[in-house]
Amino acid sequence: MKAQDFMNKLNTQSLNLILREYPIAADFLANFRLENLSKEIPVSEALKDVNPEILEEFGLDGYDLLQNLSLFLENLTETETSLDRVTSITILGGVNKLKEPENISITIYPGEIISIVGPTGAGKSRLLNDIECLAQGDTPTGRDILINGIHIEEEQRFQLDGKLVAELSQNMNFVMDLTVHQFLEMHAKSRLTPNANEIIEKCFLCANQLAGEQFTKDTKVTQLSGGQSRALMISDTAYMSNSPIVLIDEIENAGIDRRKAITLLAKNEKIVFVSTHDPLLALSSDKRIVIKNGGIHKIIQTSEEEKKNLKSIEKIDNILLKLRNNLRSGETITEDLLKL
Ligand SMILES: Nc1ncnc2c1ncn2[C@@H]1O[C@H](COP(=O)(O)OP(=O)(O)OP(=O)(O)O)[C@@H](O)[C@H]1O
Ligand SMILES: [Mg+2]
View (tube, rainbow, N blue to C red):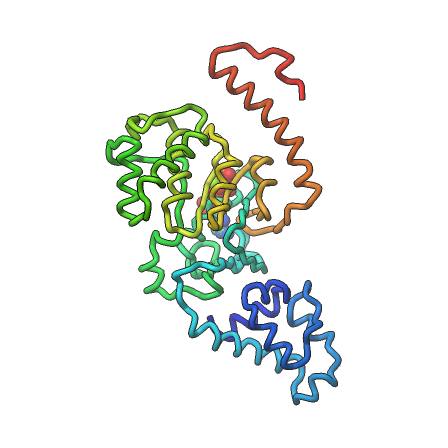
């Protein structure tokens, strides 16, 4: 990443975020005795509040310091371009469908769940696609996706194709007619999974927990229902895939325990993006990105109050689940099913 990119970051991101991504920036600031900068506002703003006398001592003003910090971070990251381990993913805003700038930068860390909400046709899947192809300003949105704070070079992008991001789309097209066990075994082998048998067993049990209807290891993957195959893929991704980023487009209709599914993925230190119209999923995430007219309109941190409301939403959801199960098993819907 170039000094200019860091400059943009320092102009838009809070010191808190910068320190989280580059803890060594704290040492840099301490050298100038700037340990007590405001942490919640963009770094450039925080520097404006510094008493100029402090900086004059070093023959600098706030702008020089900002430039020096950008250069410092550039040097630091030049030697650290390894993408073996994803420590963060950053979405740099582009434009919405009206070509208005998004003016946004959001950085996400392993273990975080981000939901993407917005009306039909707003651009949720588009954002997931941008992440999947590691957009570098070359998609209709003009967004940039940075990994570990770094722009991906064309060559790296090609090498990384399919390795960084696992996508769980609605339709699982199984090409070969394997049994569930053979399928898991093949994945374990191709990914050189250690303790393969143990992991296969775990994967299978977990997939069955997620799915509404049970299946056996001898079931052919082509015979699995939509929900079952999705459950299998989620569990396979959680336990066996090396991809640190998981994208899920519309999980709700799959008839699986969707909250369990996303928390399972996040627990395995993956970054999970899930596009959804479902309040239960949206509030189970750490943050939600609101899309409007093709652009990132807002980023909302799930509040304590919302987390508290999750309990009530779960109750409502369980009622719907019961109704669905009753319908499925050919029973009638009675009023007592609707009681909270
Ligand atoms: N910023 C943008 N600039 C140009 N085109 C865009 C932009 N964002 C989205 N689009 C286009 O708008 C169309 C609808 O977007 P998308 O399919 O992502 O909607 P969605 O929110 O996923 O809808 P649904 O809820 O129905 O799945 C797509 O053709 C997409 O490429
Ligand atoms: Mg969509």
